[in-house]
Length: 246
Image (cartoon, rainbow, N blue to C red; front, side, top):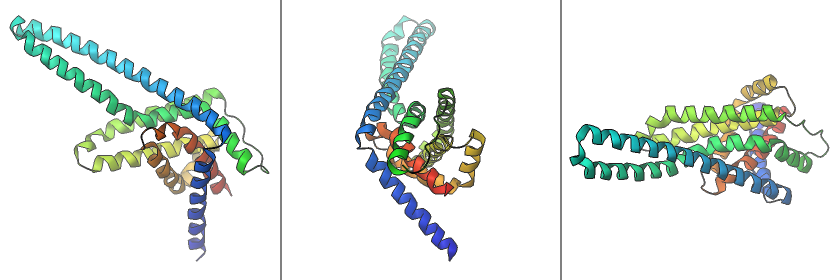
């Protein structure tokens, strides 16, 4: 009976946390952070896209020269057509890849604004409680970078599952929920605890953190709106940290 009541309280607390995080995104202080977050996320995606495009163009040029050397000038037209087709496919691949890179990018972008977002949430919803301590910029960047790299590795491992209709999308959604839930909860918790203790706290409440991560994964899967993921994710995890530590 007591466990059922506790589960019900946790569920209600989760729903209230999601509603509070979404509602605060429209406040004036959050709008300023939102513009900076979107600008940085777009800049990173553009830079990554340009770098990948340059790499693929170089590979196509190198491959075209190698093929003409091996096959001779008579195959020039066919090689040009194949190279053009591959270039178009690569461009489309970069666009599609940016979608899968969004969780990694938001994890990195979020590290720039974690304290600014968290402080706004704490002032608005927990004014009678002490505010957390700002993370050292190097630590925030390190955690964000580790989460971004981990996201890419997990996605590369899960990539073959895309060949199975429907299963790939589910695996990517679950992976996104786990990764973003993990990184943003630990960033929120490290405002109040040492890094080791924050990780232990996340493991102790991993089901609650993962459930919150599912909401973040749903948010990041919505095109355009997902540019605001760092704000929603960090605001939500500030509430979740308060929820599990009470």
